[in-house]
Length: 384
Image (cartoon, rainbow, N blue to C red; front, side):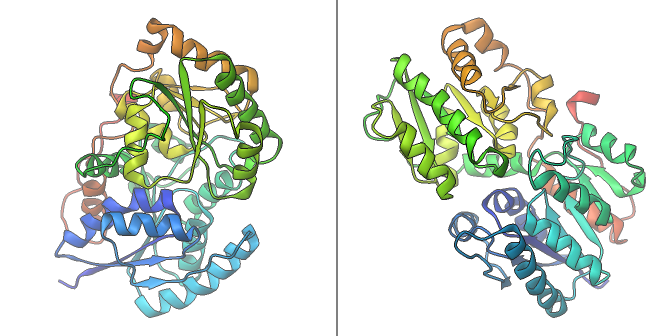
């Protein structure tokens, strides 16, 4: 039988982390001819992940511009994807999550009448501007997709409520857990900054979402300053995103404080090491919300809403928003109240078991008639 030609498209660090285990699994399957197209939407951070997981793109669009706008990312990626799809001529294109690269990959494939598979389908906040532009990106991708690879049963239920065909929905678990388990097997250098004692209680910060730029970022950094100034028992470790709208505010408000450490963006392995080492994490990242429960590290979500409610329901995360007072009060409670802390660290991760990539490959082969029976889905805990 002719091999199934699968093209994976990604362009940012979060996509690369979550698609790396999928790419490695697809490359292992003798029935699959797998190609990788990267847009380079995030150049340096993407390249870090490609090197870490040993991935070599077949086509690199290299679209990144300094201070690029969403319009520039969209138009440059769309033109490049048209040429890439003509060159590869795949049977199906896989995109991931909610980035502009993923939306463009799905749109270009639709224009070329090529089926689309959406990894991490079905996530919603219900607010089209939170997160921006990710909420509309993922809704539009799901509208364009032919195969909907939902990470949890909750995401599946969202897709069913939107009248997506049940036969095209498959629950996989989240591929970020696959990546996390791969990373855990690799030697990781210590990422603790100079001046941080080995026994220090670390508050790890990761924030970069567009809706948090400007006034919300200032509010976040003011809350962090309150912690650094009033809590002698905690050190803030903030790997600041390369976006000047993050870097400039962080350095203005936190620079010079002895217990606030602003770092450059970390490679994945050192960042995983920091997540494991941290007492708690403050983040607006979707991936971190999924990874931290596996590491038994509580998460305070710096957003008004989250499309990942499973961790909140499990007690492993709390949505506090970019709110100065809540940042200080919740962080202080997690530093002081051992019973509250324990309530956020017990339980299993609702997002995956490390086998999502295997399930994705199995389902693709089933849908394209390379396997006779539909494979087993991830037993999402909220429906167990």
